[in-house]
Amino acid sequence: MMKGISLVVLVLLFPPPLLANPTPDEILERAFGTRYDCTITGVIEIETRKGEQTAMKRRMDVATKSIGSRLHTYAMFREPQYVRGMAFLGIEANEDGKSEERFVYLPSMRKIRRVSGSQSDDAFLGTDLSYQDFERQRRQNFRVALTGEGTIGGEQTWTITARPERVSGYEAVEHAIAAKDFAILATRYFKKGATEAYKELTMERAQMFEQGACRVPRRIRVEDRQRGTTTVLAVSQLRIDADLPDDLFSMVSLETKRPIPGL
Image (cartoon, rainbow, N blue to C red):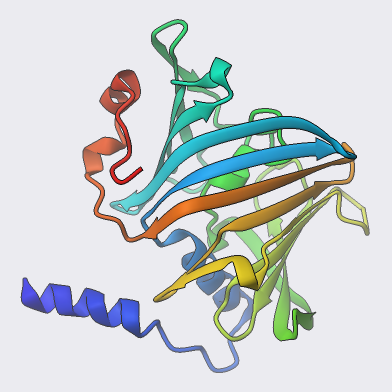
């Protein structure tokens, strides 16, 4: 047992070394790992604006954990009042090409409803974020190429262009990935044949939570140029590698509106 604990401590204190001359596939693999291979709890506030007008606000408690090889997401909605008590459970697909399993508890009906996993590009609760923005991404689901280099905030970045292997609402996505630690600093989505992104996510280094190999943004700004709206997602009370029980990510938790430990 002590040996296992010591290994965990070493991983947290000393993240995996940088790769020498990494390939585009290796860059994206490591970038996705820094973002998704972490157990997380936190309070998420989402605000969508059109011009100076606040169009919508959402607040929820969220937990994520990899169980086996599948990422699980559990969320309890707190605000606004009409969604209070709603709960969400997302379970990563167990096969490439399959859709994520999604379930929503509706307090007004006191029932669990399964949500179609095939529409990952649909807007999440009317915001500029999509369900896909909350789901784990895997390198093997994309055709990957290094398409440029640049700088963001004075640090060197690679531009990795990824094209989905299956039919999607976008043709390509570009990730600006920090060369020093593989943190994803920006993500841009493109429609078929377009040269300008229709949606862009930015994650500032100053708002990045860094622990061990994990790089989790505490603030994401989303600009949807098709809708003319901007969404800001802010995370507070963020914890990495929290000790979460596996059964938190279950139908029973949905039905009982089980609180997330520490929130």
